Image 1 (tube, rainbow, N blue to C red):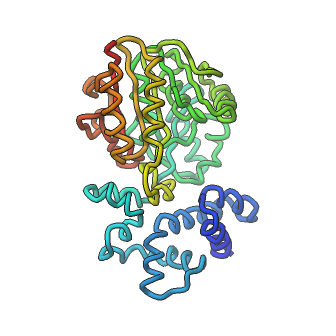
Image 2 (image 1 turned 180 degrees about the vertical axis):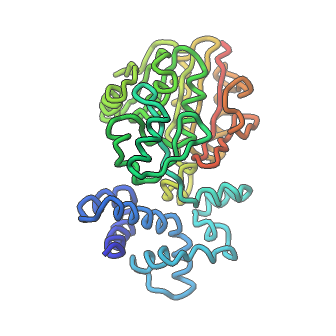
Image 3 (image 1 turned 90 degrees about the horizontal axis):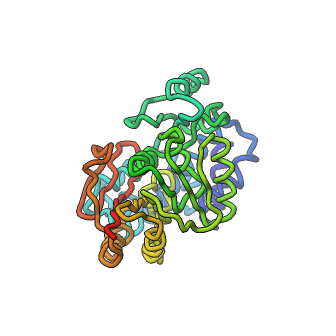
Length: 364
């Protein structure tokens, strides 16, 4: 039954794409237990993660190109024999992504791993010890992270009382690292692209509401969710309904991006053919956010990707024309989890997504 439901989901995915939506459309009404649904979700992730490789195997072996074949290849672990194939099949990615990763085989391998589910503890409502204890009482795995805010667990923990009671929220380790670094950058902080509020909640937790934290999200629906979540998590955040005209010590720009660095959780990111208009959008957002940075303050740019167009090639023109300089990470916490370069750093947490970060100081 489970493989039949998986084949249904793959049928829809092959026609329409958007893995997450296909899972949402079919799994909740499948009549399966939470555990069974999570097993199928992991199987679907595997199919999408190795889709380009499976297409290659189907072609060279003359197999029937059907959803059932994709599911069988995933169940059989057919990727184990891919070492002799060309790079883009071996790591199952577009030719563009293969070119980005060709000198970073360790990244290519990492992006095909199955990630843990990571929780960010809400210190405004609980402690890491209490959250660990609650997970263990529910017979759920609980492993301390290298970060003081995070617990590594399994996907089934999304249904835990810990989440229901807002003692923690699901957030990747590297995303939490961005929040930890941001929290250290000043007393007044503005999250410029707040989304549904993951980093806001983390900063409010890390500082136990000890900083003046403001946030803005241009999407009205997401902004409504952001406000609700801040209330539910006891996070003292002023959510702006319009772009702020105030000045802050630190402005965080967690910009929209290709998401290649988060491909373990969203493997569709490995098949992008180019960054499209995203670099122009990222540069435009940086310029807008720069207006909110105090003299001597910092603009913190973060993207969960490694493409040169969205990283160094955004920072280069920005610092050239906007009165900001690239600040070293030397005085910040957790620099042991950063691989520094001339323009910023890539995150190196062994279980977290791959982010590019750049701290830009306002010299005007």
